[in-house]
Length: 517
Ligand SMILES: [Zn+2]
Picture 1 (cartoon, rainbow, N blue to C red):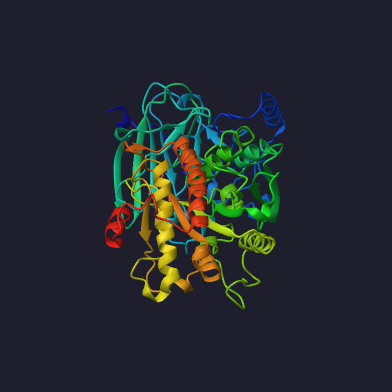
Picture 2 (cartoon, rainbow, N blue to C red):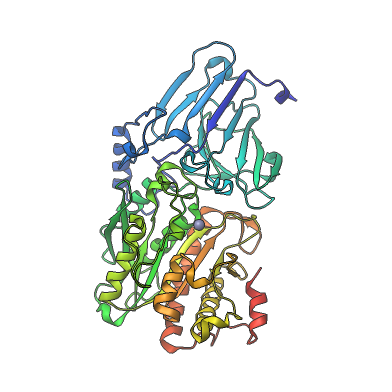
């Protein structure tokens, strides 16, 4: 096999390469004018090359391609020869093979490192890479060796590739020509003949950048149902925005609130597609499209990305201050409602926003925390509950909240193909639920079963009724299902009859079998 004749070239890419300029996915819904302005913007954007030792702080507010210590691209060549470094929008410091390396098979290597180069982080956090390959030969197989990927399961999730960052394709199982793992880290090789371009983008999942979100939010600015507010700033000065969607002609006092926040963990791009799908649905043609959701009854308060620093940096899990897993930073202060003063600004921003809205009214009835699971690919989307029916210590309201979560999961599965949403028991043992630092525990402590607070984990693997690999469109469609299920839930909430139509069986044990893996 030709591959045996390895060229002298080894290209080592230390991960994660951040590609922040992202004219991702067709800008459906964007006017031709806004497309043009994006183009113009692109023309004027200059990609900044940063030295390997560039401090993360210097990247503050830069929404261009960024390079950090961990995203260095190194190309080694045994024989002497010029190494061309090419800069172009969309990637920094991608090295291009010189001419004589263009023929034959190229072999690339991606070595995953810890977020922020912090070796104290668990290896299973290594769950993101996104690279651009230049000079790919379109006639012979190209091999991409991925080293040290922190997949939680024994089967890897098939990565995706694109020639234009608009259309994305999944690799096929046969493209994975080797797959070995030990102690939770996996090495695998993707072999593929790319057919239409010598430049290829490859990513672990469908990417969703800070820029993609910004461009999407711009399309909403004139929508009368939408209000976009900056509710805070990340540690490095990136805005944290809240998108509020409701019918402005109707007095808010008569409505109920739905809270949604997403993208705590940067690698979990599925949660961003779900949020975009949710917002697209709610705002379609000034909401003629969302006929199954009555926006005169509901206010959606949505924070699409609470960890923009981590996303911009190409991290998998944490903020640039690597000890911060924002999911576990809801540190209570003097009481259950207030948080400590030194919590990360991202948490402070959403906590403050919730506090203000709660004071102002109307009441919240749902709080969703959107994530994407790092689990074997045959795990579908599921709602993550911290409760179970034998949780007697949480009393009637605990039992009631759990039933409401089941009810919501069931409603979602009505809109997103049966059996795709599951409720899973919390697996974090050793600490009572009310001592945990997840946002939904904060909701529980302060609102009990009044607010159906839960984590919704989207999948990057197999999805839907037909066991097909999930696409970003499917993830958007899940967002649409969230909108519809929320409205149905609202109707149950005001009538107080949660299982009237949807409960499949009366027996709780049977219900658990239905929902749990
Ligand atoms: Zn997560």
